[in-house]
Length: 293
Image (tube, rainbow, N blue to C red; front, side, top):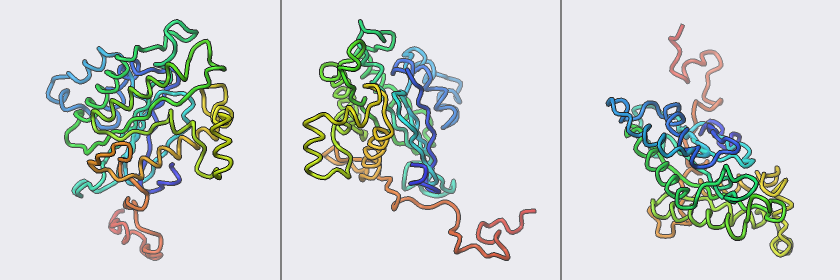
């Protein structure tokens, strides 16, 4: 994504392996202060938002900072994550696109079986939904001077046979994916449905191979290295699905599944002048820095 959005968005990855939404909530104030600055509440001497996060003890997955310059989505090995993209525009300029876009993805660890090998990561389904809801609300209200957008990622599917001691894709992980989808619909934010999308072939599969892919559950081999962490091909599939959501128009569309963030590359302004506009003998002219010593 950093190559795709070069000079249009910057991406900050705050994915942390092993985290669940509870731990993500605990870290959320630190991430928001780093990206958005102090919260409106804390600047008024009231750190209510930070206290609220600390009580919940949950952390967001990846934070994507939107900057009409250059974004990146790094490997999603099974880190729960918040991604932010920050838009690069002059302060006085009207922001047609959000300055910051947060993509939150939790659930792969929350959905560990409560009596399984990784039970310490388990978060009950109702708390998981509450954590996602609170994360979105806290992000949206953190700094009213910033134009911020939020999207969600469902947990990806897992291979139950390989992860039988800790996960169950068909009976448990799917419930967390559905709950994540409900939160997105209730709050009107876009969502990337990894659970469904990663059980389908990449876009370059032909029709014949696509049928084989689905009937033979080829996604388990192509996309998962150990039944839960992503292979390079799995990371590329994640990239495809995220790009699809970013490219979709951000409108109050009735079909929520089709709504996105309206951040197609062609729609974003480029930072800094094109090389063709730079005067070889006086380069500062194109940047307005001619008089800089």
